[in-house]
Image (cartoon, rainbow, N blue to C red; front, side, top):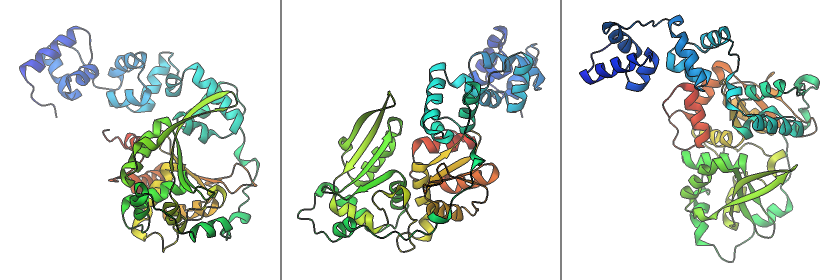
Length: 392
């Protein structure tokens, strides 16, 4: 319902209307509802039309200002399909992805896809949706790999009973000569997983961390620069100095990539994590945590940590998560879903599988992971809130 407004607001509406601004723009500028602005514009003698057709000029103007289709839909309270329809009628056929990416970025996307043949990984690196990357590739004449060209090779990778490596046994039995006080808190935190934060960080380590068991045992992380927040949060949680976070630059196929790493050289911390199921060189052998390691009420906090490391949220609301077959089947079971027709495997000789799902089920899963959570990767939480229409 259109409400009463102050004399100052009324004067501002009249001033903006005389400048040729429409209901949508004035509403945004003054923080008033569109029905309220429309009501007072009519009282002042200005013509308004709150129908979708009446917002056509506003839609075109916002588009020409560089607004994305989803933002125009939100600002004008019109569906995305209606926005696209009016833009197409006006000969404006660019999609949101074309506005978001420049030529150089599109070129880099194509080059990366040629190298790794994985749309989701390209999308994850560039912070885009899988659908958006697909459109970029097709627009640039890139031939896409057909996912269904080969069937899944699951049997060799299910219920793996990998023997504990000798070096792990040696480290577990090692008595440190000296316990570094800088890492004592971190060790104590992972001796028992009994809180939301502990479960989250164990999940994140399962996905994006690693334990080195060589001469100088350590826990290590590596993330892209834009995800620095997650390393800062880990440092605060464990009492480790943020000065331990280092910048690393490397070259891959002629391109330079900058990332952040965090090394925690602690025998006792590594021992605690090994006892919680974090194995060295785990990417192809990682098993889910046992009931003794993780309580039932903490499972979704653990999965959120894992998802922040090896999961993805696309702009269309679909989600994906990658890992060993045992890990993925365990996670999907906890989601209350099945992997039927939702698994892909890039290499039939490797124990790396990706589960993808969209629609209502994906939203239900995201709610279980992120609604009212106390710790998460900023980028993933922001993507979740954006999809749900929550304020940032």
